[in-house]
Length: 171
Image (cartoon, rainbow, N blue to C red; front, side, top):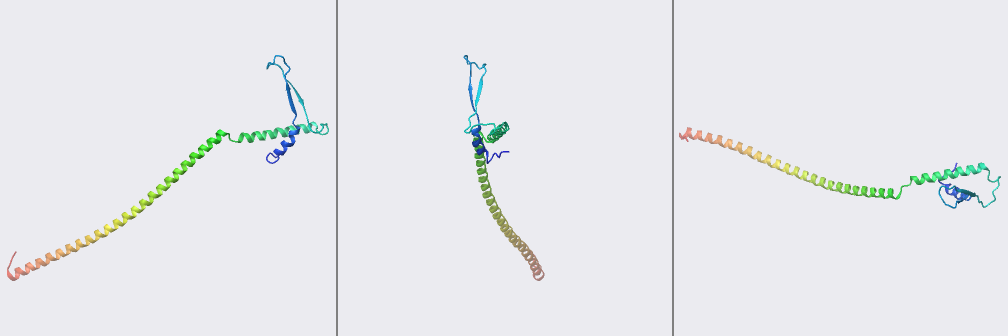
């Protein structure tokens, strides 16, 4: 079996010398495509061809190897993308890169917005805490004021009762 990856070039280079030259001649005075074509084959080789050097089995093996090599080359070429496919792939890659750049920009923007919102929430919390602290102070002052007012009223009532009991003065 022939290794197509490493030995393909060597195989083709060595075996090109074994490929027969084919000459085609048309024997027709009318030159119509319906006429028969006779093909003559002249095999040339740098060394004299003898039956001992190239037996029929060797020729069949060589032809099979050539067929396999050509099939391998054809399969390789069929797997290769065409210029149009390459352009399409490049366009897709450019579009994907543009989308990726847009997404990165959106992520950076979202990060900045998130940071801004966190800072605003922190500031709002601090403001709420300060307002709650001030409200607690005002409530405490109001409670103290009510207590003080109630005591003053009680003291006034006591004073009034004292004045009435001592001086008979009634308001």
